[in-house]
Amino acid sequence: MMFAGVPRSGEETLVFFDLETTGLNIYECDIVQLSAISGERTFNVYIFPRCPIDPGSSRVTGLTTHSQTLLLHGQPVQTVPLREALNGFISFLKTFSRPVLVGHNCKRFDCPVLNRILNQFYLLDEFQDVVTGYLDTLLLSREMFTLQKYSQPFLVQHFLQKSYGAHDATEDVRVLQELYRAWRPNSDLVNKHKFIL
DNA sequence: TGCCAGGCCCTCTTTAGGGCCTT
Image 1 (cartoon, rainbow, N blue to C red):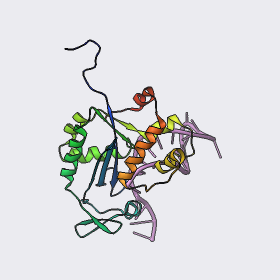
Image 2: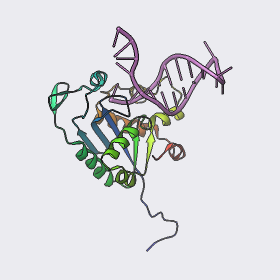
Image 3: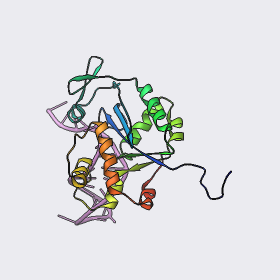
Image 4: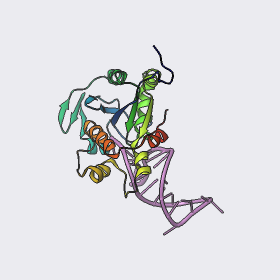
């Protein structure tokens, strides 16, 4: 039985996500790690890149390649084919009610990169059918607080009083979720900053 | 050898420039 005024769709679910890439050029870089978290449920994959990793990126992520192996701080990590990683991420997102992807500076960096690569595999339409919207915590934090800096490590130090191993995507998403919980932004502000691509 | 992104925000602004932020 349907009741007037009861929304047909469920609650939105925030899914915090992060990419580690081969570089900062959003038109050329490739994804080497894709992580997400929502509550206690996590997703993480490593991908052997189709292009070389910039030395600057290796310096900050600890990820390098040798032969056909991806190394994290010199130790081999298990990788999956890029298409499998993307499909796995879509499947992960499908398990949530109306997922909203949340990332730090995702409007400028993660979303364009992810969308470009999804499009290369003809997966963009399916992805956009699953994702309800996006939220950028960089833009959100700039509106909520007046601070000297808004980088994720600075925000973590400022609000959570701890440093963390930035540039491991799994740790980045975990701490971003923690930050968001500490901020408790009101729904008006969140809705103002929510966007679709 | 020298260069190597780019949109957004701030301000000593708007006929602009510099720094931030992501890897």
